Length: 59
Image (cartoon, rainbow, N blue to C red; front, side):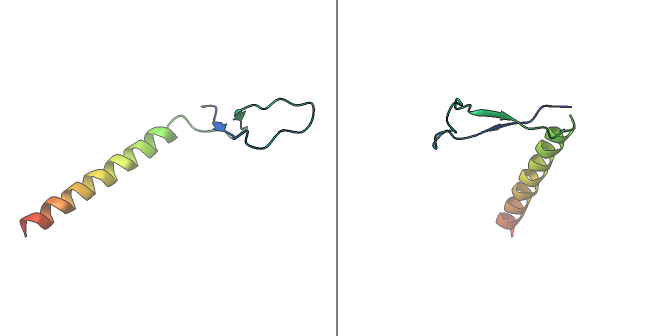
C-alpha cells in the first residue's frame, strides 16, 4: 500500500493554537498498482490520439 498525501492550502489561517501544515495524510488505502494503471491509461490514450492524427493526415 502507498500512503496518499494531499497538499492543502494555508491561505486561510488555521484554528487558534494550531500550526499550518501544508501536507495532510489521508487514511485512504491506495493499492500499489493503481499509479501504474493510471499511467498506463494515459499512455494508451496518447497512442490512440497519435494514431488518429496520423491516419487523418493520410486521407
